Image (cartoon, rainbow, N blue to C red; front, side, top):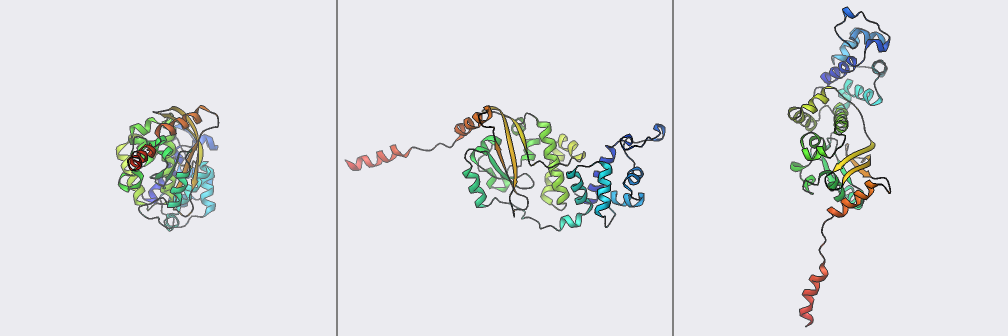
Length: 302
């Protein structure tokens, strides 16, 4: 992913989405071939020379001040997430100078212990690419019971929830509002790509999804950018039916972007009852050793 072309594509997409009338420009319709803002119009509104803005959009500006980027962001009415993304793209050297994580990430022993202790709460640990590094029993049952429980332990079989959202039919069917989830997933990848332009594993994931999913390719081309640290998930689980779960996205310090996601239901709700049912229905079978001990010790007692 080339940072300069990403910057240009992002700015063009936001110019195209903003009509001149929205910013007080009334163009002559017969002289206009585009519906969005032209470069010169954006430069004028942002108080930037057209030459300087053109160099920025083409990725040829070697140094761009915060003031200029923030003026462009205000003119384009960017969100806080989009403004941060613009700064990442405009300064790829600063982004790529951040410490690079190991190529193969692993959940720490203490993080796995935390997951195991959350017996009544579905939870997973993911890296910045949305690879599942670990999940607890209920997290596995909730999100991917059709996969082997130990699949996150081996990089070759490690589930990636974004890949599954577009390419795994069973996981896709889990979401009652799939379109919204797909947009959020792509928006997250866009943010990560802006912060880590030299991330080869991320580029490979984006390439694979672009080649194998027209829906992903169309969303990626729109350049959505958004963080999502908490919210609601509306699920249709094959075992327990409809679920409405709150989720929290917690960044794990010192892990280069690993995060723990935990899902909870409102106390006393049908979703809480469904989670309990899911937990009991999918709990590992614990062998009763009493009969075994009795059969072994009884002959000796005789």
